[in-house]
Image (tube, rainbow, N blue to C red; front, top):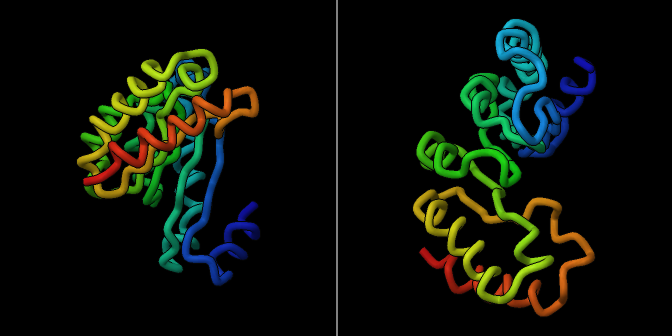
Length: 165
């Protein structure tokens, strides 16, 4: 694995995406001390060539990794992509001025809801994220194909309206 990160450090890309589903929907599936003793020190070693090369690192993780976000940032990560389970308020308060933040939108209002539900979900995310220079709302599940076209189009309309800073 170290060779993989070394190769990424040597490539021309300015941004590297790293995906590690280290938690579940409810959060950690191992005791937090295990993560801090084993996972994060190794993650920091793996990311070191990227950090030294000046790469931006976007960390992607499904589930709720709120309790570990600072640990991940300490490994050299400069951005977070997260699902609705990770606390948007915490992420914006803690990293909103220093890191890129992508995500937190729930696909269920788009899939099963009304236009009012879609608007409420976009308003929820944008009311928190709008003041963070690097926040981008994204629907978790990346707009699954069963979202009605009308709701998808309305989502983009409302997002464009509310994303203006």
